[in-house]
Image (cartoon, rainbow, N blue to C red; front, side, top):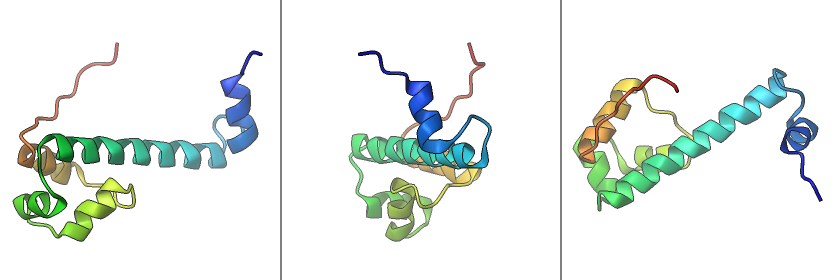
Length: 94
């Protein structure tokens, strides 16, 4: 059986470029980025409270970030990265 991912996405979320498809794509990116932050915090060996203390936030904020409920500003993303001993690097798309 051949599985057509594009057809399934269109069936589930509407055609590419539609408002419902865009909302679904945005939600997927939010969840993806939330998982990256969660994994980075755990790899740094930090609790949510420790990370929050390092950036001057509360634990609830870190929890909301890791659940994809809150999107950090660019400056907060840089502070989060630095607090976990990471850097943010922008590279040209290939």
